Length: 400
Image 1 (cartoon, rainbow, N blue to C red):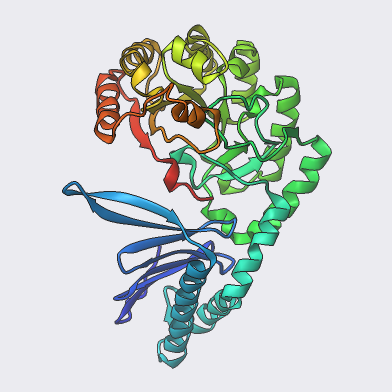
Image 2: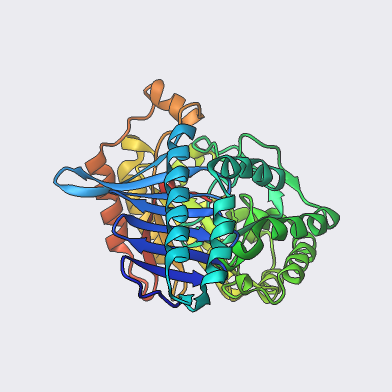
């Protein structure tokens, strides 16, 4: 990455992004000229491909700084778009007035051309990008934190189960599997929409909630189409990833899972939530504790990495001790090693879900913040497998 040494700002210029930093902050545009992020004042603003804008800042809480996320309304988003556009306009003027023949390794003429692309994305045009996104994607509800910069390829829409009492991620859509014909027509349109932005994406994530629910004989041809579409693109270098539930894994033979690994699948993320069988049943989570263990064993035997996700605070006071004890026992029984991940996700009761109704009916009592934090520390500190990364999973920080 090359930088301009001109007084007053530092400029980075790559095929897939244009960024600069000055005393006012830092702004990044993607290779097509669309705003990607803006650091201004005490806040980081990130614009998703879907047109939403999220503000992240650190706020003082109980004597320490806590990261806070909030999705902006349209008025606030327009302000962010306008600030970034005006910065680009000011930089264009600086470049035009400069006597330097080159900036960041590019001619003044080349840089001005890139800035004209950026300036073409006025606030109104950026809002119109929502329609282009919606024509291609169903909402991208969630990704694992290490996959936030992955390219989501929606082989399926929705969740084939959709009955967990705590989840509303896919309640707004019916389950659908793209046919090979649909996929072949969709992928070129996706690549056109992304353009040079594709260079910012790291790895391919198969959406939506549980692509591995497809039989291997149906999933493999779709995966081959994806591989062909992105052959030669760096986005595939990191690998292919997917969510799954335990039943989707245990219903596949070792050879079927190995065939998916040979086709590029690298890591499978399992929302295990808890090691307590009683709590699993209460949550109406598919699969059993035995299947949790078996699913990870099968993934590892097939040469696949595992990302296992557990919730802290789930089950409230009623299940608190059982949740901690049996989750720790479960994690220690799993054959996890280097390349595997354990995510601990703080549970929030979502209004309108059956779980929220359990709270209203006083059948579940929520834990306090300190109790949830204690659960996190007890589970985190009990993980003994060498080389396994353990990290918090903050759903509020996701934007695609």
